[in-house]
Every structure is written in structure tokens, then in C-alpha cells.
Length: 422
Image 1 (tube, helix red, strand yellow):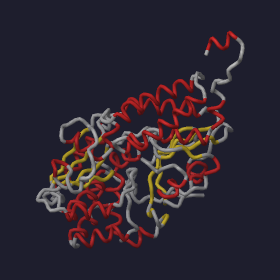
Image 2: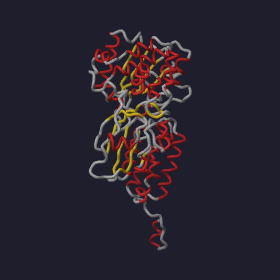
Image 3: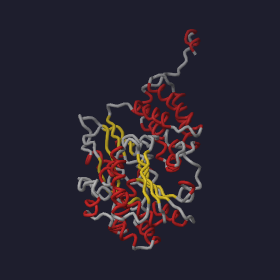
Image 4: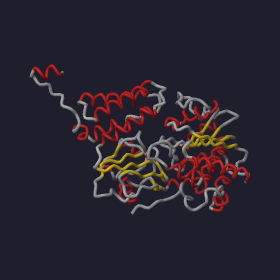
């Protein structure tokens, strides 16, 4: 039976998140002490040697490479930002860390600040996470009082609930007091980010993992999970599954281990129909894909993604069309409106899915969905717009029967009455 391996969640349920003394007694801030006695270039090499720690927020970008870019950027003022704007439906892994182990995030950010030469840090936290915001502010005061921040000034900023602010440049725009819209890249934030200065933006899970890598070493971390995506990953499991919960497992764990092992399987004697990994912007996996490892590359080969770490299990009592309609409406509502392909495309996609799910569409409408999805994936300004139609376009090929059952016939009869109706 698959077992959890808690590295990032090492302190959850074991310490009082409001007590820095509990964190220190559990070994907290030892990695920071070790880091500050090590050359920054050596620390970056350690992160890279750990098997190229790749961001745990969804994009999977090389963390060491990001830090190196910021470290080498010539600027007097640099920033470190923690992306805690967890807005993906079904995802709550970051909230678990924020509310149960805030000092692990601060320690990771302080290590990053030391490496890149940053003197100011921001935690951009989802506004609805009121308890997390409160706990973070308390943790910062405690770390400052203990003299652990080393002159780095920390701030907690509350997001306004915009989905697009999960994208790092839109987050920076929001942090600067502007409308949350993505920027043109390049320049990348590590060169020209917050207030035009070099900025590192990493996810909550990424920062919380850093102290363990620094403390225990690259070879230890590299030996866990899949070689191309080493370490562990946190998942939040929901939907038609017995155990709706969160867990942390090595990245060589399979989807079957998650759904039928830790998840306890499908209740009420139903069969598995689909699993959507990573959130609404990610593709589906079918029951014959359950032996796929949950690492970044294996998921990509299946047309899916790890994304934000959510796992939505769907049984055979559901039509995939209702789920796709909800996804289309979600992206129509959350589009920031900056670019035409996303602003107009998400609206048209919702209209088409409403027509299809209502049984009023023909094969031509289905072809239009695939064509529109292709345009959006190629021409939307940011990754969020580009991925808005991924689940829909992929589902057409994976679940053709669901679509065929509701499509109207396009057959044209020769009788005069039928001809007049066309």
C-alpha cells in the first residue's frame, strides 16, 4: 500500500503554527543558519544538484535557474515574493501549509533572499484565506523579534480573488496597485519584476520545501521519486472518492495509488470515469491511464498536468458535458479581458458548451469548439488563457460518446416542409 512521505508537510499537525518556539524546537531555521554560512553560488548549485527542483505551483520551472538569474541581475534592490494566491478550484494544498507551518515558508524565502541578495519579501495571499493572513503576519513579527530575518523586510498582501493573479506577472501588477493583468515576457521578473527590480516569485510549496533540501542535501532529495521530477508532491483529493483529503507522496507514485490507495476508491459501487489533475485548466485522464506516475513529465505525455496539485475524481454517473460547461463558465468569468482571444474566446466557448450540453448542437458546433480551442491555445496572451480550453478540447477525443449522445442530426430530408426549415 502506498504511504505518505511528508517533507514539505513535515510539521503539519505536530507543532502550534502560532508558536515560533515550536518550529525551532522541531528543527526550524537550522537550514537558514546553514545557508548563511554557505556561499550563495554553492547553495544554488545544491538546489540544482537536488535534481533540478521544479516549481510546485504548476509551471514546473527550474527553481535553481530562476534564482541564478535573479542573483546575477545587476541591481541594488531585489525582491522575493511568495505566490499564495491559491485560486484553482479544488486546490487547498497551500492553505494547509500557510495555516499549519508558516515559518517553513518564511525560512525558504529567507534562504532565497540570502542567495539572490534581496532585502524585501512579500507574501501575496488569497484574500479569502483570512486565518492564513493572520497567522503569516504573526509569524513575521515572531521571526523579526528573534532576529532571524537578517534585515529582510516582510509584508503580507491580500489578493482580491482574481484567478489570473496566480500568474506571476499579473500578481506583480496587482501588488503594485494596478489591475491584475499579465505582462509581456521577456523581460522576466528575475530581471525586471516588482517595481522594475529583479524579483523571484515562487509558490508556497516550493519555498516550504527549500529548508529540507538545504539541511539534508541534494543527494538525499535527488533519491526520492522520479529522477526527472524528484522529491514529493502535495495533492488535494476531491470528488467521487471515499477519502476526500490531502497528502504528500513521492513523485513516482501512480495515479492508481492515489485514487484507490490513499483515496480509498470510488464509493457506492460506481466505476471511475475520469480524473482531472491540476485544476480546471488541465486535461483529463481515463481509467486506463491509472498507472501513470504523478511526475510532471509523465503527466505531460498523457496530455494532462500536475498543475496546482488538485485531483478531481469523477465516477460514471456523470456526463462529462456538465463538468465541461462549468469549466467554460469559470474561465468566461475569470478572464482578465486583456487580450481578445481570451476575452472573446472564453465567452464563445461557454456559449458553445451551453448549446452542446443542452442538446441543441450539431457536429459543426463540435468542430467549432475544437477550432476555437486551437486558436486560444496558440494566440492567448498568457498561459492561463492558453490553457482555458485544454480540458474541453481533450475531452472531445477522450469521451466521444458523451458528445455524440446529445448532438442533433444534420440530415436534410427532401420533403418540402423539411426544406423550408433549413
